[in-house]
Length: 274
Image (cartoon, rainbow, N blue to C red):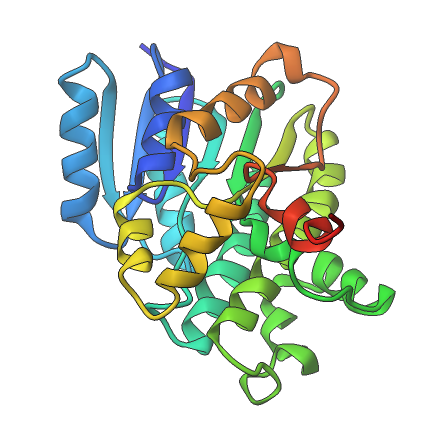
């Protein structure tokens, strides 16, 4: 029997929280470069009654993305996309971050956009970091949004020699995610589908705990302590936003980015006014 299919990219806590919220009754294809990570998440979900199949995939490879889509289509129409994959600026090189977080996400949105079913919807996870860098020029924003995917990494301002460090690479990647979602929403709309972006702040996950213990740990701890919320977030709080965006209640929302950071960005810009 054919089922609606949900593609989930990145076997992390945010991906799992979103999939658990809306993946019941669907065929979930869970892709990750580390298959053992995907298998662990799948086991947890299967023990809770979900139908999950894992797939070893590389977000930086168009062929790998297409292979995962081909596998998913064996079960039915692709109706949902959750992209929670990405690299940490403390754990990857400039080149890797740009190849996976920036280029890979752009390719994924493009390839899924070619096959997404009528009424389908997706979310990709970016980051508050995209809001923390200085404004780009209108031309640069246009290039991030609309440059053909296979030419993105040829842009002058994305050359590793022009990117000062891995944090800047990460910020550029997340800014590109936001702009790419806007451009792809126009294309997805022609198929009767929607795509949005969620930009989380600091969310407690195993990756975040690694960050807390890494070279930027004190910075991150100070960031959430100073924020209006006064704490880091949880994966389920990001799933709350995704549930709205991917349900009929979000039917008028597409091409948007939702900042969910406990007010950390507000504090970054306006927190010293007392």
